[in-house]
Image (cartoon, rainbow, N blue to C red):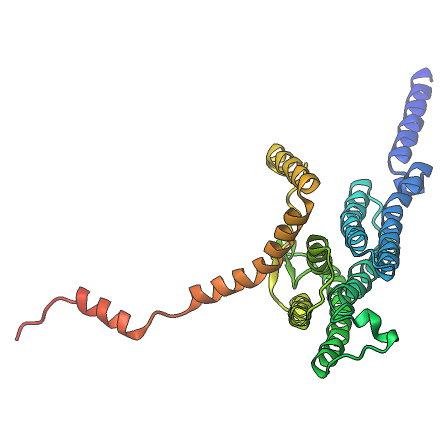
Length: 304
């Protein structure tokens, strides 16, 4: 009887332990508090977009560019925090997409137009009666078009990314992005503004600036692959090397932010087209005369 009572108590204790282990963590207060952290980073990303736009309107272009860079960091942290805490949700994904459209679409487009086109040949004095030349008017109209195209292409890039994220992942999708990511496109424009500081005043430079914005918009909706570097982190195979490189990069950004950010953004934006061009060159067939010459050299001589 005592042995049966002991087995019953042991069974009840094991059932309680099993039910405790099987209790989903999402229903615990600790899990609910952790689910707020990724959204806080996303809200900070939205604030960076608002601060960048307000700084652009007040002609503080360097601060606007820095705000976009801070939003870039926050955009990377919210996803990592959500994965580490296991608090991924559809609501957070949709909120992150809306924040990306603001911070990396609208904010850099307004900054690019105000810094690179609006100051062209005294365009700030249009209210005083100073008229633009026909060429400057065309460049200004083109600036409206390319900056709006940047916003539209960025939104299309995000929509395509969200659709592809719902599909089963393969080895290629884990290593590459299809098209230039919109944070990288915004970072390219912001790094140039942060490096140049002084707004563009000549029509020729403004025209080149418009071409660069249009090229960046095209790269975002293209099918060119870009490395995503997701395997790099503290949980990678070589975490010490990653930490050392990250420390050196932070030191360079802290000491020489203008040149470091500019080189990084340009190198990443150009890495996709360069890799695609190298792939096309490798696939090109050898010239016919080269094949004939090699064949004639290797073939044995025939007897008469």
